[in-house]
Image 1 (spheres, one colour):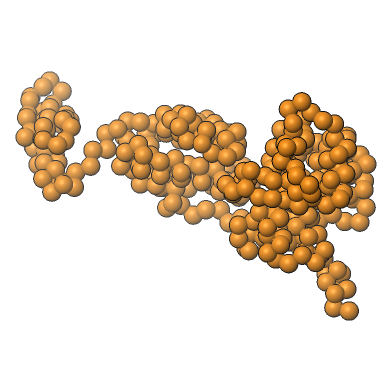
Image 2 (image 1 turned 135 degrees about the vertical axis):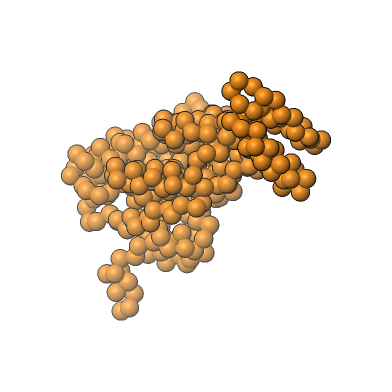
Length: 320
């Protein structure tokens, strides 16, 4: 039932109804107050009323704080997720209530990021985090908000990599690397493992000629066979007290590899390109699709194809 009270600043109306929280607003005229009360009570009677007051008063920044404490620690790559959380925290959009953010706001943010030179793939990943936050807000936090990120076009990613090592590059890079980086690069080429998988390896995971990864990016364990060159490389590394093969976090090897290539004048080659190189070499050694897929850990044939770049001259040799 609605209660109307005349105040100096207008008409105050409060609605109390069983099964709903008390709701109130102030209007300039009693007619406006009555129209609003009638509409709300009608929706309550039909069971269609949605109380969005919390969503309209909780900022995106507050949601990001909750997301950082409740969701991010459960994710793989939590450090990178926190980087994206902080990116959104520092954006003016974070000052808006989550219930007031519209798709036009997201589209404007997307266009501004792209215009600043940020790659489409990075923008897509940033949007993916925000989309997940909206989903969690609805499903777990009870905010009646629409996932407006899903209403916005995502940038087209047209920067698929097909870079492979050319003659002499591998030898030059390995010669210029410090010992631990040399071992890291060698194992990346020999095993096709992701950099995060490499830095996580414990010696206890290596049994015979296989390293058994208990947890991977895809959330499942994976055995990776080791070539004689990979085994020799592992043997060359000093024994560490913590049982790990490598000393640093993955970004240290990425930056070290980039510095080495820059010093040597080798252009357009990243550490992640070595996973493409390794995957392609497995096919060139004669392994079939299922064997390569088991080694690399790709979940789909489509993703495996993105990492495979066979050289035309090698294919010509097979034709005879």
